[in-house]
Length: 507
Ligand code: AMP
Picture 1 (cartoon, rainbow, N blue to C red):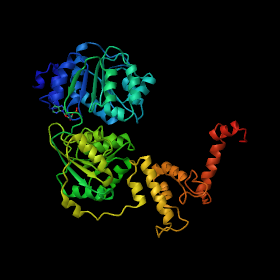
Picture 2 (tube, helix red, strand yellow; picture 1 turned 45 degrees about the horizontal axis):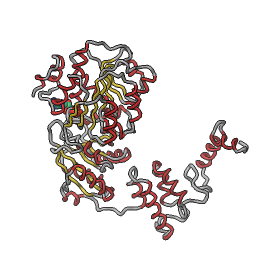
Picture 3 (cartoon, protein in one colour; picture 1 turned 90 degrees about the vertical axis):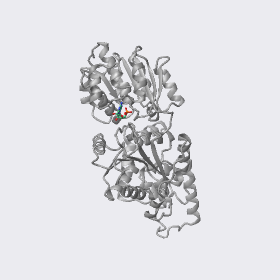
């Protein structure tokens, strides 16, 4: 089938030709005719399948056909997406497909000032692409209303739920008019997604499933490297240096901190790279993405949430620097390569503590990932021994509470058995756990709790005050901290003051 055979108006046919599409992808071929008839649709498809055009083209066609006009501060079609990158991309697609029509589009997302977004809504828009939080915010400010909505698309539904948007989605759905056409897309269909779909779609929607659920694209060549955590950076660097054909490389890191660390290692080795994650400003993320698309940088390091919005053609290699906890995420990640009919390579690093994650991934995908070129290990520095500190550092962001407690317990036992374990540690020096607590502020609360609970030989008498210094170790800083705390405690209306008043004590 060709696009020209689909009943799309001339301006849309022209736009499709302008973006270079000739034949519809399977999801487009199966969705577009039913959507043009006005039916609801449940699409089980990953990004890279062409699903944006599958819903955008029929919505544009029906907007053209309806003969209605946009009213001020309303939208006629709403596309809800989990991330700002995705929202920007989908709006860009709509704009391209609508370039020869008078249909207007707007995009709203959080993390930036809302003034220009509100301005764009004053006259009303035909197609509004939004993330849930900012949409509800602007509805609350009466900058936009959903009362005139005709089409509702919930895209990346599984990701929406993963990211905790369920309540926001319910709030948005409650504001929609009863009569509307609904489109619901998700890469996977676990029970909670099926239930959510049932609350949005009209009975008997068209169901289009383009790839078997949670199965990675067959065209992706995969390789596995078993490597300890501390040498992952060196392995990535060696692989990139040894393979100049790795031109457009996407590296997935489990944490933001990890992503920054990887870029530091690569920059040191002269590899042009950038990181995108939630701590980077929207401008920095867009700049990094732009440089990656235009191949000014060779490597883009991303966390899963940031990467969800990446739509870059021709990603040659995807690296799983850390394996994801959720096996479905692995499928999303490697689906970033081998898009639009092309081949791709996915390389995964697996440290000893990730073996379980690897088994879950292999079970889900029903693929045993073959080991990569073993000769590369000869180029790496020898493995280093794990210390309590490195264990703590390496496990940041993935250690659950019971594991943390077990490790802390074990470490405490060792310390009471061998108080002078580290010859460099002076008797009055703070023990390893306490030092780690200072060093890694994310772990601090958890560590403080462990110290409070177990403590013997670890916790200084009197517990660890808020500033992290044991009592009696008064420096200028800790004195200032204490003064600040006293001030806070005595503030009118403070919780401490209230509690004392309730207990009849003096303030
Ligand atoms: P999507 O799954 O919508 O994110 O699309 C993935 C990529 O495929 C995008 O870069 C689209 O521009 C491209 N694409 C979508 N439909 C077609 C088509 N029919 N022919 C060629 N490329 C397409």
